[in-house]
Image 1 (cartoon, chains in turn green, blue):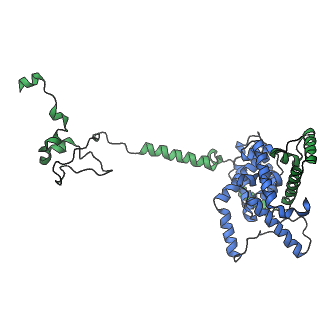
Image 2: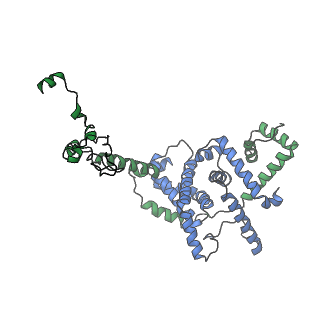
Image 3: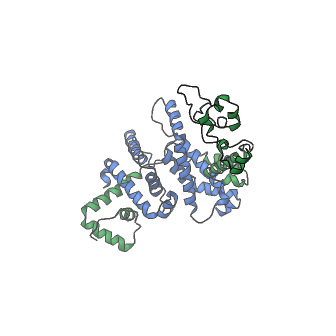
Length: 180
Length: 188
């Protein structure tokens, strides 16, 4: 084998997990390649050094503490209790969302839909606007309420504004003209 | 585990007795605080017990167990439980580095004070080197080196392919090879 060891080869070689043929092939390469051999030796050394790290084991009271906690567990847990916390949280969030959508008060049916077209600005510069200009976020229903506009004398004198109300300028048919 | 699933609590005790030491060792190396490791190990066994009915013997029990232990350890590290414990230890220890509450299971407790101090220092260097690895590499090393699990088991726990795991292990050991070179000494 002339190629250097691949990443996977190093670990399997050191773990002794290669089959006999593969191992023999790597051995031949290692005999000829000082780089790979040096690396294998160092990796083997590191694995040995890691073995020096000792860990604390369970204390003598571990079993008793675990049994005490187990005794508090119900013999048969309800199905939701076996859910992973993440799933349970997602389920709860979904339930809240569905409930929120269901209980949210809908728009009352008797309120007319707001007209999106706004009246033009006043003719005279500096003159007070006939109708309050809506600010961003302010509802426009009151401004565009046709009936409210007819109660406003200033507005009624504003011909250009009245042009906006198409109903006043519907084309007159010949029959209607005759009847006038 | 099938007996546990059927409601045999005594069978569960046998399982806990068999696996408590490897689980505590694993968790200790993850959170490096023995009391917390023990508390987390109990949490792992409780989770196993609570989820016993959903256990499917498609994989080894140890794979399932260490997958849960891994999740519990990572959650503890992320929610800062370890930090709280360490802060408490630091307060109580007047600023000194927190030490394990119990003596470690050292293979050879003999030797003079200086030798033991050197050994403790070496262990501290190893701990720091492993702890500095990226999370997935650290888990791979702990499961491979200290739990001696098979590649397929570790890959299952870490949700990756066996090939990716071997590459992960190689990179982890390569990093450790560089960081721990001063400790290699007469080993190579």
